[in-house]
Amino acid sequence: MFRDKTYRIHLLCWTIYIAYEILLTGTLNGRFSHPLTYIFFYSIEIGLFYVHALIIMPRLFRAHGSRYILEAVLLASLLCSYTILLVLSSYFLELVGVRKRPLTLDGAFFLYLCWRAVLFLMYATGFFFVRRYIQQTAEQARRSLDLERMRTKMAQLESDYLRSQISPHLLFNTLNFIKFAAKHRPEQSEEAILLLTQTLDFSLSKSQYGLIPLREELKQVENIIRINQLRYDGKVTVELLKELEVNGKLVPPISILTIVENIYKHGDLLKEKYPARISITEQQDSLTIKTENLIASYPDSQARGRGSGLTNLKERMESFYGERNFSLEYGKHGRYFRLELTIPTTWNHILTETEFPTISQRKLDT
Image 1: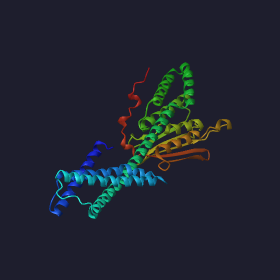
Image 2 (image 1 turned 90 degrees about the vertical axis):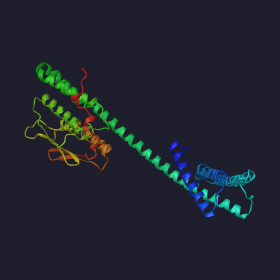
Image 3 (image 1 turned 120 degrees about the horizontal axis):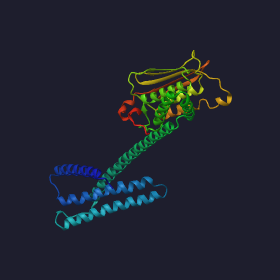
Image 4 (image 1 turned 135 degrees about the horizontal axis):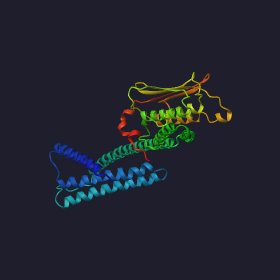
């Protein structure tokens, strides 16, 4: 019924209560009763307390309709049992010589029994409601904790899944370039293989708490930029600007990478006069990513899938930060497509970068 710690608390509370009541009544009456008297009477009253609190009250609280009659009968039976036990105890104590005065079943005796019964029933009722409130509060806290753990687990699983889905078109185009470069540009082929290996290793690595160090994400951004520079022989124009005070923030994986891939998918990057720009700026308690690129001209059949990556990005940010704790705005501005994402960083101090080894610190499988 009670855990070991709870049992000790109950025992301590009863000891304090009984000692207080015995000292008070004994001092007021000028005499103390025999220890057996206290043992018998308090045992019966404490029994009344727990039967009412743990059996009668829970049943009464769940009762409805005709069941109230049954619970009332049970309560009446309990009071009758309480009275009979006290009377029998009094006769027994008188029989063994502990009780000096003979028991008189008069109005004063039954008035005393009623007062003690009501007193302990009130204690038991209060105990029931306090215990029920504590149990409900603990259950709500447990459910909230389980829900939060589930959300964290789902976010981590989603992040791990998304990283395992590094854009197939990037992989396909890079492999095609490696095949071409192996014959015509061997040194670039070797560099492209190394960059692709690092990107794939990143996609297979596990994140803790669904987050990764910002420097890891930026490393993959730089890898993608470099791979595309190799593919287009340095003709694509993408500028990456970083204003970071401390390169130790944590971000959801594939967040900045999704934005950069969106530029390569749907931007016109071959005009030197209109370079695409990616700026990452750290404020006191937030991180802001801004991009601007010339919009490419696509046939309708090619443009249908545009925007799905950013829609998914918004949903992921909501799962990590909540709807109101980040901002994501994007859209067309004349010939340009602009995007601005701001995410909080004030709570990231609870994790340190030492928990996330860099790709360079891990040995790649050969």
